[in-house]
Length: 358
Image (cartoon, rainbow, N blue to C red; front, side, top):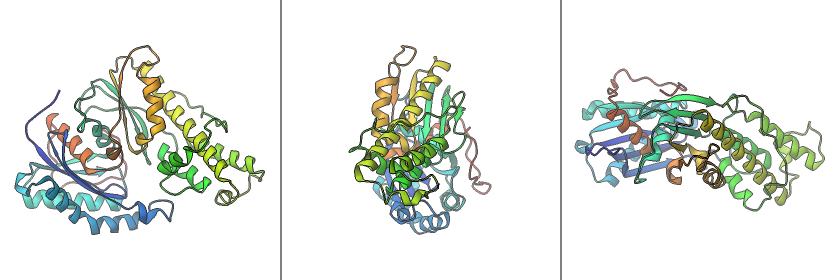
């Protein structure tokens, strides 16, 4: 069902290393979407440094908000509400975004909606798609910090039915990329290297985890041991030294083999979730790792006609909306509004590095 009340939400996202703001109308129409990434800053470190990320947000946040309003062709008087990510994320980064949103809500006299980051990733699938996923649905949320299967009966109703017991899938991509000598962030660099690789060259294990939970720590270690064995080096060889001994073809083959294995693990668990919840009408992918093209192709091939023989439409966010952005925050906030969620008191808004979606 679509809702057309002309509601325009200014949304702010700063949970990690993207400073973002967007203006969303009626939860589905993107009027503007501005993202300033810090990926170039952290590429040489191989990961995000929280203190540096927070300082970078502080420099960029107000210009990004101003640009979002300018691109939307709106003034602050034409904004109906303000939304902001308040959890989960890096404490310093969240603080910059929430303080900015609180300040604007108070100064402009606008209602404030504090949204959950993973909820926002799911609602990226409602943006400019022309149709909405049907409920009940199963969502696979996969990013640098999260790997979860979430069951949704209706808007703003979330039940976590599977989660990672250790590393998130995106974190695993980053760590494997580091072993192979590929640049940060690991997802895009592994996908690029894998284009020249043989996905069947190295056999990697599927971790044995009961139920719908995930584990990726063992897969990361399996790649490490496989690289050491391929190079004929002892297991005491530090992981950071291995890249110096790999040929370009070996690097590409390991990237392709790891990527294929990781994608198969995700899809196998989602098949199990479908069998556990056959009433689910659609499948929704969300988070930065959902931009992976191999995953998209495997999912469309194996999940639309699922393990129970029932056709279900599979949704992916547009690649530009898979990573962190303000548009998804605005969409999530809108569907909170129509679900009857009350605005947050800007004077009482608090942040949390990690809380359960709800």
